[in-house]
Amino acid sequence: MTDDTNLPQIDRWHSRPLDVHRWSNHPEIKALTEQLYVECGINTLDKAGNRKPKKTAKDMLRVLLLDLYVAWLNDPSLALGFSKNNNSYSTGSRMDRIHIGNNIIKVEEKLVAVGYVEELDWFHDKTGK
Image 1 (cartoon, rainbow, N blue to C red):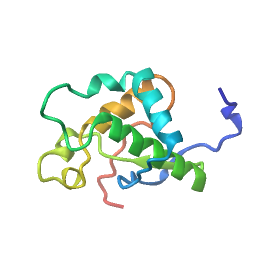
Image 2 (cartoon, rainbow, N blue to C red):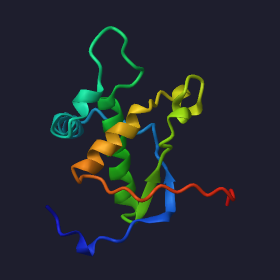
Image 3 (cartoon, rainbow, N blue to C red):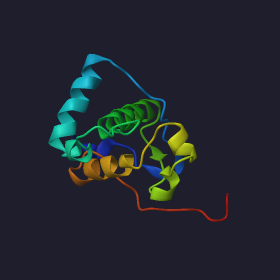
């Protein structure tokens, strides 16, 4: 484990939306995704059977890992955000059109539960600022 006392504080007011277009087939990210997929129990989120979602929990894990890494490389104090409201992922929604399912919420929850990701308290600015 790294000593995180030297890392900058994540600031909710210094944030950007999750970039859902991050993708890599690099062997290291594929190996990390496979490791965390099992280690964090994310594999339990993908259903067996013929009806597969457009993007699996494993796909969401890879997108989330890559965008967290890119954000950290550019600015270690940058926060990433995405909706945790299941209605945001309904058929025809913006998230659905870009193939992001509500399983990303559960993927992030599992990463938080094991301590790989820090989550800031939920916040929604109703002023629109």
